[in-house]
Length: 437
Image 1: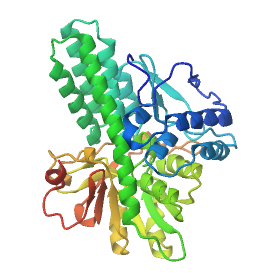
Image 2 (image 1 turned 180 degrees about the vertical axis):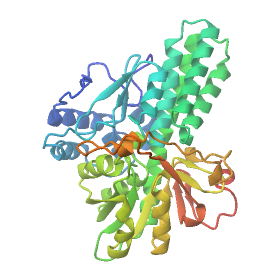
Image 3 (image 1 turned 90 degrees about the vertical axis):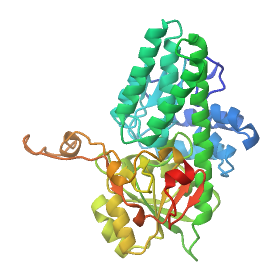
Image 4 (image 1 turned 60 degrees about the horizontal axis):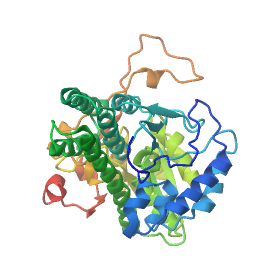
């Protein structure tokens, strides 16, 4: 993609991009040392936020947002975590010249493999297949996918460019119709395009969409930083022991781009020197809690324990849990929310045991067109993702299965929304979408 090097997660002149071949060894220790050095170089105060975020890495964002992280020290921890044959994580996407490198999360934690997307529809395919996941991340990828489509069609006839942009926008919307941030990013980028005009000059259209994509990415990083700070301030520290937090799914930088939402709160608490322990539900069908969130927490030396989804009732009865933190893929106008399947029973059981539940999500997750949970879209995955497990005998081929990716949690089970615009607590005198829309 054209433009200067002042972009989020983007290749910089003179820097060696890591290999994207499947199974490639990233040179773990050397890679993360270089990664952290760039983080230090690009870290800045919030006054210089735009430049720092646009060159960002997770460690750089930590410095920028005042989370107290030590990028150089984190590099050794990152490399050490995966010393047993696995490879360390990196930013979930990176922008190159005419390509978006998407980290394939289906292969983690065993391999760090990137998918090189050269068209917006290829990005949509990666989103649909869960190579990239998490609403905040998908919102950013959506914006850059449209910028990529505009750039590839700078010299095209207006009718060709317009058809391509509209087709790409539809493909992105349909890739994960349950994720509100995708539609929000499409709307913003299309508005930027139409402000130039459908018959406008191709370079100007590409520049306008790219500027909007950069704004979306920067706003996300700074907004997630506020979620972390608001959440950390809200949660009191127990006397004489760690704060025990229960969560579901992956809600860290892999799903958000830099900081994280629910796990961003956890990281902010830990960075402040407070003792914290995380209980992680494994999160079927993709086991994103065990496979993605647990290694992410290990990278930053945050103690965590993975628990089977079906054992959450036992956990809440038998072990100390102070609070439940969850994310949200889409929030209805009344506050009902769609999130990873298992969030609803978790909320019910948390209420039964008197454990508060807080939703950590940016306002981009709010869908003002959905009046309540009945209007929220639920995505389904193929039956094979539940029935065909590597290393286990498969059930008979005629076995039927339903694999919802999300479920809906009603607002009366939620204690508060921790958002990038502050904390909203019940009773809700007006719809969330009206108050913050």
